[in-house]
Every structure is written in C-alpha cells, then in structure tokens.
Image (cartoon, helix red, strand yellow):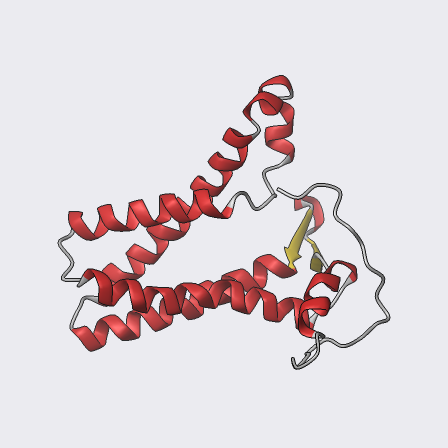
Length: 178
C-alpha cells in the first residue's frame, strides 16, 4: 500500500498528510461503530452510550498499543528517549491495544450499567471489530504499493481470488517489524 494518499499544503500552517492505512482504518472504525449502534438499537440500548463506548475502546486501544510497544523495548527507549517522539506515528502492538481496549470497555459497561449480555455482545463485537482491519486490508488491495507484496502473496495462492494480481510492484522487506 502506498503510505501516503494525499499531501495537502496548508500554506503557513505547513503540510497535512493523509495516510492510506489510517484513512481506511478510520473508515473501518466508523463502519464498525455504525454496525454496533444498529445492533444496540435492536436491543433497546441507548445508541449514544454505544458511540461513547466505541470511542473509549478506540482511545484505550491506541494507548495500550503504544504503551506495549514502549514496554517491550523499554531498555532501548530508556537509552534513546528521543525515539519515543520519532515513533509516535508507528502503530504499536496489537495485543496491548486489544487488552487495554477490552478492559476499558468492561469498565465502561459496568460503570454505566449497560444491559449487555456478555457472550452475545462478545460475538457481535467480534463482527464489528473485524471490520477495521478488513477495510484497511481492502485499502491495501485497492491502492497497491511497494509494501503490499505480502497481501499479494496471500491472495494469489492457488484456489484464492485476488483483487491485486499485479506483478509490476517490486517486493520490499521491512527493516524492522514490531
């Protein structure tokens, strides 16, 4: 996927960059939130609380992912503290984000006494939660770039359909995977 979709020049305010993955991740979040609100209305739950729950989970997920990234390499970031600021645009660690988002969601549901049946909502939130990475991956297929070779390898295996069969892009191996 091409990392940058648009670079907007804002004059004296500088440049504003719209990243492809971030745009599709946000689109996936909005679709997932819309699905969760529709399911909540069907259950008779206040949709504003579900929107707030989604925002709490999103922010907690970002914080948990970044905190886990820094904790895993704590010695490195202790020795090079400026790298913390340089790595603010990196995604973080999925498991840390998931754990903190899940914990914050449980606390939010208990705090506002939302009438959620746990296993029913775990099943439904898994569907809406899977929309975010699915839409971001679809963005990689729609806007293939030098770093989308992994997706191309996965989707061009025998017996699978591929949305990006192009071979004109060269493969690039990431220097560091975190």
